[in-house]
Image (cartoon, rainbow, N blue to C red; front, side):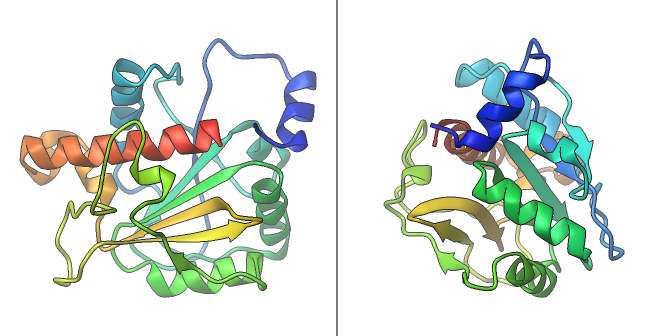
Length: 213
């Protein structure tokens, strides 16, 4: 069950025909707009295969405004620097504690900035590697070995890290896997169909978790 904050907001905001998810526009110089076909393709896959009814195009949202609280799932990607101002730090913290879910997918080069900025959001929490037996790797698709490897950067194993509050995963950070590359149109990265399918299935698990828990 989602927390009170989202329930309260939905009582006072007209209900859309389909749920929407959002891509975060951030400051600092990083290309927040990278992988433009990835979320639309993931949405289409989820709607076709796991019973979701998500609007076909993601909304672009900034962390500073109240619009953030309309979306149960927000996504951050890119290659460069990320900087949150003080208002964004406070708003993102409130969003995640209120039942929202953040997925950060390192498109390459985000790691030091993601860790720095999320430490400002949750000074009391540290990213922890997520166990392979966590629910997010079990439903609706099984990933017994944890996060799959989709795109090679530095010959490192793929890892999934999380911020947990009261035992609940509120922020997923996927590193050295680059799921978003696997979600993009086939001709963008020329990934094999099997690799794209793994990426999309893992993405469906993430969406499922964000909506369900």
